[in-house]
Length: 483
Image 1 (cartoon, rainbow, N blue to C red):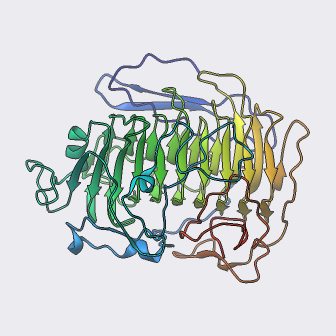
Image 2 (image 1 turned 90 degrees about the horizontal axis):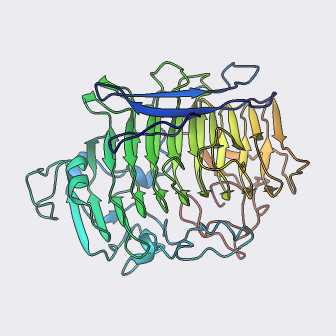
Image 3 (image 1 turned 30 degrees about the horizontal axis):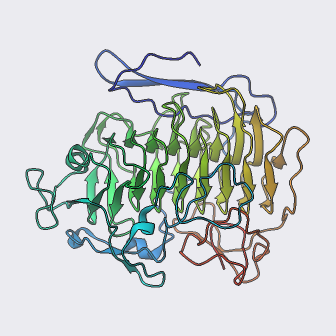
């Protein structure tokens, strides 16, 4: 990619692509620049699969896998108690890129940055309510608030955009009550390793972010800050107003970020399939961002059918992708590209997409090393067109262990450099109520699932997507859910 001159107002969302399943990827890339009128245009190049037919069928309404996440209605606005988080979603993170074989998850990131619930004054892992993080500064947002208010619990702001204007100091939490909010926001403030900035939907999935009536951005949330956590939001791109349609959900170009416990769905479904691309979650190295965590999110119904340019979780730097449920994505459910390296991809369920997991590097920003030291384990990759695929430039230190890979119609696993996957389970995962098209399929493991007890402890997140513990006593299951 030709390096583009950028300014403070530029938005560089990650170049999104799906690489060739049968031929060597020769060119992939993208850049986003401001046009004269302030609108943004993204360009990308791609080598596509020989067979471009769609492998997935998207439903028209969002999935609601986590029943606790649907508790909130707009009538509950102003509720700033944390509810719906059944366990400690951010107490641990394996962002130490050198510790590929570390079985124990530390309570902080490798740089010493505590994540959301690691800083809470008291945490119950069995209750649906938790106490607040101990940050120095706190702001509150509610649909019944006012942007001319003080932003306190009793006088909250009304919009996320107003909160972004004032939440500029390290050690800040922005508490967002249940309700509906206009997206297209940009956050640029950074926390520190000892004082992060948290954006928290107080009820899991209760704060719903939707396209504004007239959109000037192609994204729901653009974060450029370092040490920022975005937790528990419902990003719903179903209904677009006028203006620019969303092609991106949450994008982060910062370092040491955490995207956790969000539901991101129906993004870029009503757009033309172009090389501009898109993704539900994008973690980008373009601004030198490193060590981003994507943990315990549900991503579904992303991209127009048959469009290989739009991805589910797209990472071009180092970090972790853990405990995510990703399904019905036009391109890849999980996709590494550009400068992606030192990434741990564990305990995800990726299904009903064109690709399950793509590991590769190319169209480099800052490095030409390729995707290496990537650890892929305990994932269910099921009923996609392609299963696990190495593309572009990859290294010899990638590991593929204890994945359940089955019913991916073109191939299940395609690796490079003589690499061989180990302890692969090649059986139907026997999910409780799997469906390619149902509004609310159930991806939990049935009691007879071959995924039960077949995972490994290495780099496993300490709890599953529901908050159930993963440990040697219960056994390590494959996929996003512990039985």
